[in-house]
Length: 173
Image (tube, helix red, strand yellow):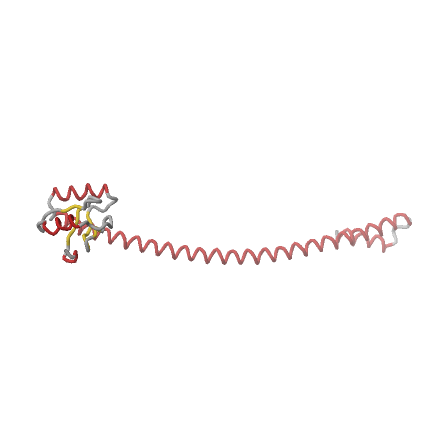
């Protein structure tokens, strides 16, 4: 548009056009081109301002993404470390369980495994202060007398949840 406006202005200034009608048309075209050029420059400025605003927003969002990614990476690293720790602990507990299970009579171990499957993973519970820690219910006086009278190697079961009761020196009986 600038080239066209310059070319038209040169034609006007050169005096080559002598017809008043052509001169008037050429002047109108130059004015129209100048107006159009001003409008286009305004549009370009507006687009440049928007572009700058969008670039700032992109930079801000890129920074936020980087921050969130760093937090996610840190959380992943913590999760992986915790998973390794849990795997190590599980392996250790499994070894300990195998050692203990080897010293338990087969019929008692079979009963324990059956109860464990039925009771959501807990086949035995500690008897503590007259309460079964499996079902959290207190034993009645008759059940407590039976527990007190039973031999130390007798397998006792809770009347409520059917778990094996484990008596300890802290049971208070």
